[in-house]
Amino acid sequence: MWPGIALSLEITQTLYSKKSLFQQIDLYETRQHGRMLVLDGIIQLTQFDEYTYQEMLSHLPLFAHPSPRNILVIGGGDGGILREIGRHEKVEQIDFCEIDEEVIAVSKQFLPELACGFDDPRVRVHIGDGNAFVQEKTAAYDVIIVDSSDPIGPGEALFQKSFYEGLKTALKPGGIIACQGESIFMHQKWVVTLARMTGELFPVQAYANVQVPTYPGGSIGICMGSLGPELVRPARKISHSLQDQLKYYTPQMHEAAFVLPRFAEKLLEGR
Ligand code: SAM
Image (tube, rainbow, N blue to C red; front, side):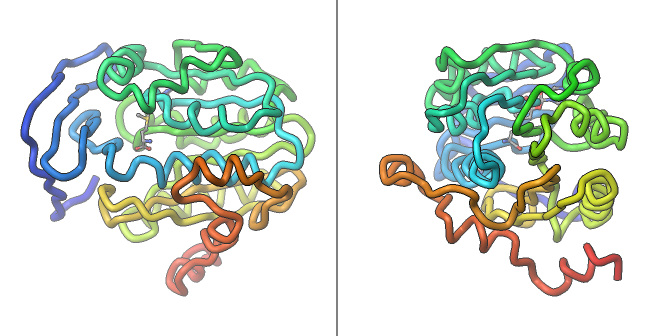
């Protein structure tokens, strides 16, 4: 997906390497970045900077919603998004749908500080294709988070318009979606496609940018759609105890994440 570019991290040990039914799964110890999860040769996360993405993909939609109780997570087999959602005491139920149970097992074995998200009694785990799962749901969720891999391999279905239509149908009135939105530097065609799809389907749409040093280009986007609430400002105050648990998200970072460089603004304006 990144012709002409390579990102190298020094590996000190291979802890796991196996092909599952869906993808090649590798787990490495690195010299500077802790453990690293790689799927089909693509870095998914490192212990060094995983919190930036997990916190923003979770807390942007959860704080934009005035009262999120029923949540769906698609993908995200490492458990990091579940860990972040679990910090919200008023959330009542978290459905989780991941296609590859091997990713969950590897994360439980080697990334316990992420996979602790699975210990939350509010989480109901479903193993299967997230697209098929969503198509069966109607008005069921306040917030849906799509923590997918890239649009090649099993993640491909999660970048199609029919999937986004399914997400909209699965939302309760006033619901919000937040999806892994690729990179404004590296994947402009995907960014435009995702923003256009959400813009056509949702009355409120916004695109946020998050720094992730170990992703190609150093950042990743979050594509959001809302059936009511505005997205670019938190709808609720964050408690001191929750803020103390976080390393990246603050109410100020919430608003700042939607301020994009001029080239990206033009891209999303279709110019
Ligand atoms: N936070 C990291 C990131 O965005 O790079 C990690 C992403 S997470 C590991 C992506 C997960 O999506 C993988 O575990 C993969 O198995 C899962 N996935 C891919 N396609 C899927 C599908 N169609 N339905 C459900 N889960 C899927």
